Amino acid sequence: MLLIMVRDGLTMRTLSDSDAAEAYAAVDGCRGYLRRWLPWVDATDSPEALAAVIRRWGVSYRFGHDVALGIFMGGSYVGNIGLHDMGRPNRSGMIGYWLAEGAQGRGVMTDCVRALAGYGFHWLGLNRIYVNCAEGNGRSRAVPLRLGFTEEGTLQDGEHLYGTFHDLKVYGTVARNWPHEGPFFIVAPEARDKAKAMGLRDEFLSVGETWIHGGSGLSDVGPDGYEDWVGDVARFREEAPEGRVEASTYLAAQGGRPVGTVQVRHRLNDALLCSGGHVGFAVRPSERRKGYATKTLTLALAKCRAMGIGSALVTCDKDNAGSAATIRRCGGVLEDERIGAGGKATQRYWVRVV
Image (cartoon, rainbow, N blue to C red; front, side, top):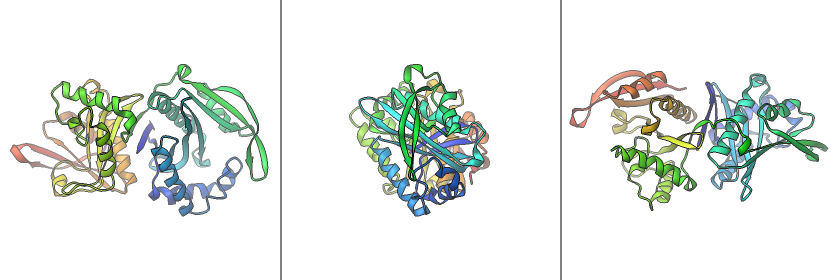
């Protein structure tokens, strides 16, 4: 539902049941280290237990209370980060995180917190974000300080871990003091995103582009149909209409501004095998030639990897040199060209993602 590009080779995304075994292995591999600071380690005693937690995170995400994301380096799970307790009307949230020992010392968590805080401020419209760190956890405390958070005080005996109380240091910042731009990400559209999504749609239509690739029919959505479209997009992830395939549709955004759309088809039918492929995407006219197409396709391929799609088919019209260059930058290898209806040639590229 959400994939954030942190830097080359480093992403954050929502987890599913299929991630439970890998995530559990990471927890189990540094259980002693994590137990010093985190209360849930003993209860995480099997992949099944972690899968149940992941499902609860999904429910909380849909209600807008929490955003829990896995951290992936080079496609491998190395930790978790979350934006929790997002309260209204205060528009605040708390960031928590952990990172496997082997991934530490490379600025990973600093970059991840910067990206998630930027998502919270720029996209979700939060006003205050804070981090609570155990007083004795120097590495954890260093992260918000590097990013300009203010040490606001101490919660005496703020956390009870395995029979011992620990003081918590509180670090906070607010939107007006946040100096960092928001990250690039793709996110499943929600009802709250109506103004952003419809503004995106209107720009495509204003220049005569009446079909938005990867938009799951957004171009045809009227002012009163947005909520129904969001519901259709959610249903199509699980069950497709006859003649279609299941697909995940996202808005692509930089900071607080949507820059395009992208759809990942979960499987191929005969029509998509000829033209369309696993991924369709579009960048809004005012944001083209800025690298967003490459970023969008990169995150779409990360979604393919998460779904277990070993090689993804990505197609484009033969005369679309920009799209062809984007596909090649992302590792696409041209297999062939096929002539479709009206005599138009489609280039078919395969990208190895697993």
